Amino acid sequence: MQISTVVVLTDSAHNNGGAAKVALQSAMGLREAGYRVIFVGGEGGRANPDLDANGVEIVSLNQPSISDTSSRRKAFFTGLWNLDAARRLKDILAPLDPVATIVHLHSWSKVLSTSIIPVIRQGPFRLVLTLHDYFTACPNGGFYDYKTHQICHRRPLGPACLSCNCDARNVTHKMWRITRQAIQRGPGNFPAAVDAFISVSDFSQDILQPFLPKETPLYRVDNPVECIKLPASHPAQANGVLYIGRLSPEKGPALLAAAARDAGVQVTFAGDGELKDSLQATYPEHTFTGWLSFSDISPLIDQTRALVLPSLWYETLGLTVLECAARGVPAIIADRCAATDVVIQEETGLFFTGGDHASLAQTLERLSDDELVARLGLASYKNFWAAPPTLEKHVNNLVEVYDRIPLPCAPATMC
Image (cartoon, rainbow, N blue to C red; front, side, top):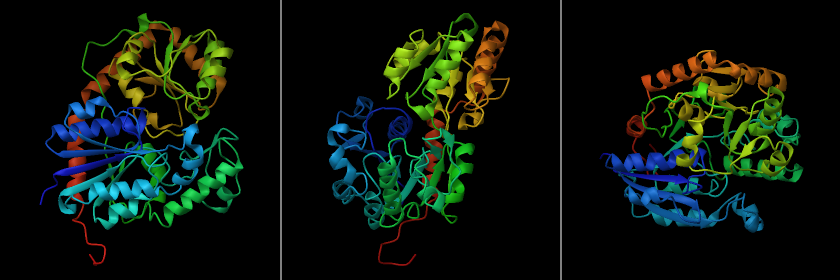
């Protein structure tokens, strides 16, 4: 029997960037391709209206997020093992045929927890996981030491990891993360229970693969990029640079704000996060827009000389780099992040030494060269549109992965 139903699982049913954005686009693309799609979001609140408009069935579990301060006490426990989410998902899956259904998990670390994994396996349903982050292996999800602001090379849950306070908050929260990771590997049987992994970049795949079950297939599927082919913009005629994303330490906005001041370059920060107020007070010469929809960000892309991705940690891709390349806007990126997969040094963008203030300032100064900016922008536009990562291509690749996964076995039988 061919697959006819896809259950898309993610923490959030609204577009807050990253995994949620890709999950939403995938769900709508699969529905357009003729599949029945059930989109299950962990959090409450209004789901993205585009889902309903495209015929996707939406189910909200109305669970607390660990990032929601109003429900922090409850989320302390549900973040470890969300029993209610597991029960709700069991009811959703009960009427579905496991032979004709695939469950595709995009995120679980903020709401769902790995309590949902045994429910999926007992179905028994086939489970696919897209590796949008590093939580599958790393307790804090980024292989990043928030205390030293450095990439972490310790083995997850190894002695050095267990004894290191690398958490953004405090040592108590680090212990909570370790507990969650132990539960994830134990009762959650995760990632061992996954039938197939999907990576979003060669860079992140190389980092994660040593920590994944060797017998489980790992496929590369490019994330779709939301764009329409229009004439290239003219970055050399624009002023300033653009930052798109969360304003949190590991993303490097403070590094960019300071380096841009030294380089005499104005930055538009499109995003929100815990650093917004302090950055806005310290760097009044820069512009801070808050969180914007993609339609609101598009005009900003057309009015910038370059996108800057100053991340101090690895990232898993950097979709904003591709979204800007689609408009002919080059990127300046840290040389140790995943965006190096999609930017060609001195051809479609510029690299700087990750975390290095002077290196970033010097690279920003190079943008005063109109000829250089025009050349990089045109090359990025041509390179992107030579093989655009469309939603149709993304869906076709997903279906190929789904079709390769063997039929499920009943929990009490041997396969």
